[in-house]
Length: 253
Image (cartoon, rainbow, N blue to C red; front, side):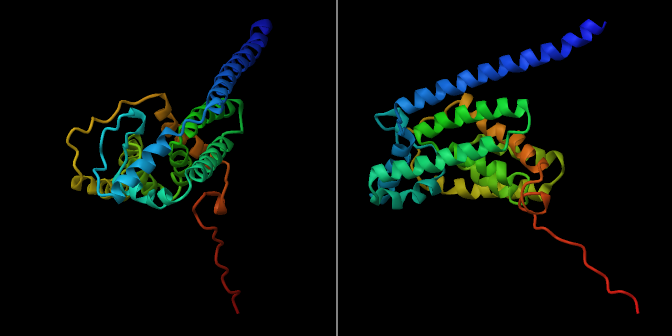
């Protein structure tokens, strides 16, 4: 019996090491794959959409290169208009810097256990790959990690859902907990940001693409946000909540 109980911790440690190695190899493979060639296809999609807006051309078109298709709410294309007047290389370098910083910050929230470290490697590998495309996803993920545990969570969900459809699922916990106001804010923000699409020609525009493995990083924001909030980071022990101290009552007499 003692031999059996002694083998259980050993088996668990072995399993953890195997998982850690597998995830580490996958992460390393993604890093090597991305650093060999920074494609930045999505930066081209963002700049192309902004350029079409400036010249009065249809926003939602099917380009010859499918990797350059624009699949976001109109406001994001308008936000990229100033970048069309800057050197392309400079835009790529600065944008990639923001994406890589967001990837590192997202991983930093998962560091308190072996399980979190494995999730951090997996999350980092996937986000690093999207950063290699120039995709906005790392910024969306870190925004959700920071804001979901705070009062800004519903607003973050709404904005994120205007860039990626999957974050709208974060409304479900609000509904489950009967936080009607939070659910209404998230849905209203997403609806308002998507509403201008009604003024654009969508004829011939393809249906939304299916989900893939990289979309899972959006759901990984949940355990990272929980890990960050439970660690007591930020003022008042909860990020986004101001620190307060009890009022002192005047001494009697």
